[in-house]
Length: 255
Image (cartoon, rainbow, N blue to C red; front, side, top):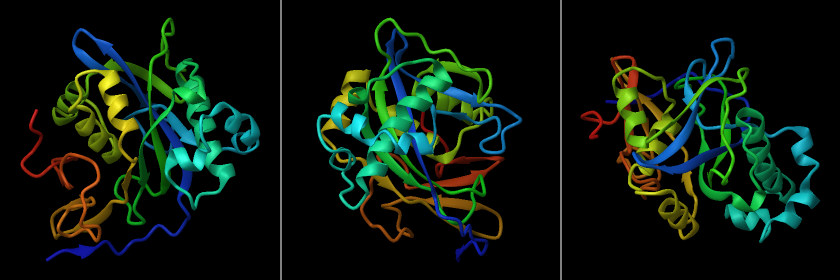
């Protein structure tokens, strides 16, 4: 018998944007992960994709952003009910945060929508909620990613499978959205294959829920028998279970 966690986060989710930066390597397709520093209050020591919350300046760039995009931002995000201002600002935030945290300059047109994560109002790893859009982009020719040493204290290019293996071995900390994203990315052989797939597929919309038993916490995703959305969204497991100080799919990772 499972029960919803009683503790609730009442604050409205914070709008944010994240970039899954990709490159091809002899080891296979790699993605850039950044390590959040110990001094930060959100995602301490976790390895994440570049990104952050929308700020006031991002919201002021709407006209410039819409001029640079091939279609209205709401259409590209496949969110017609979203305000035009916020939709455009999410693209700007993705590029700005990537530039600030890694030194990589992306054009707005280089972003490909991938997923939307609305974190649950029951705490799993943090007591803040985010409404985050994840974008894909390939590392532009001639550019090098270097972590800023402030928000990101370390960085590494790594294949999705290796990142999951390191997480399984408790060598790195990953948040559930990163775990699920890396599992999905591990299905692709190269960056262009991944980008092409995303361009032909509506962005995944993920609203996890938290359930608990007497001994554990479980995150459930669309398609899970206990999730209210019966249709699975992102490829991979439909639940992650807290086991031995980290989340993992039932039966562990198949790597």
